[in-house]
Image: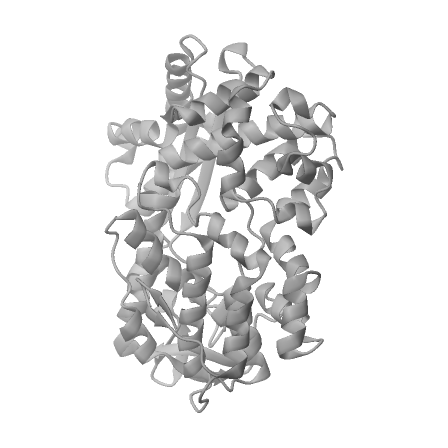
Length: 464
């Protein structure tokens, strides 16, 4: 039993589950202790320091509760083969995440996009947490342990479940779907540690009302219409975490800063000049850049590697590395102009928006922001050099409208199984949270004022 503030006692029962628990000591899983779940969010929410390790245990705990609904007759952890693969997948689904979780992956993508076609492909793949997870499950000490507890085919079965190879499988839906153990743990754990109140998911009530249905594509989870409100509450809670935590302007600014720093270090080390970044060629980050496909190098990538190297970066001969490292040290987050806020204010005083409902208003502002940001940032003006357009759209839900699909949230109405978007007016609203922010370098004289003026002009034109 492991104590957890979200789920209470996380229990491992029987031979299989306790063998699975033994994998917690594996070096690849232990690395997750040193990777924060929310990346740089603790710069904004000081207590948001929980790790991928704790989250993975939480996903296991939720998956086990969901599995009890699918296999209610099982006692003492004697699950079916699919049930065992499901629990292993839930526990190991994040084992391939790099430092600061998604921030590292996005930095590698940005670097790859800036290079010649085909260049740095290995680096981008080595930062892709899904690809790295698959490799760890099938080519490492984790793979050896999975073979010991489940046989030679077991590692691939676990990997396939994480990769959603069979989207019609009810066990896959527990690991990854619009109602999966991962999202259910995040919806409870992330706001708890961030200290924000963005709604609550009544996990106990939700679990008590989960049932198993049988459709043309196999089994799926559902709730009766009397209890669909708990599902609606879950979708809204998860949706609210995006503006509240995940897409916070300062967190995204730090992610941009991190990406700029890593891209420059990638460039310097690939050019054979690691010393210019303040590190030696034997430094763990340099070793990873030089040989990204080596899992032993990936094993070195955790948050502590970055913070432990920050003093080296601050003394780097390269000016860009040195400046950005010092910004991190001083929590000097890049300022930004919120294009969405500017557009919203322009629309508020425009007669053409009078009486326009929220859905249409959001669609018009979204289009205007896309057009205006593109126009301004593609002007190739030296004054706006180095500006970064941060954009993201998160819908409240992605409806499928199938009758009993394992990937959607199913509600039973009469004798039919419907997508929750066909039942809930809230979910059916197709609400989305959108950001269009342009970060700039305050070291460049008057760049912020110039950027604001140009965006306002372009937005007025786009909203006419």
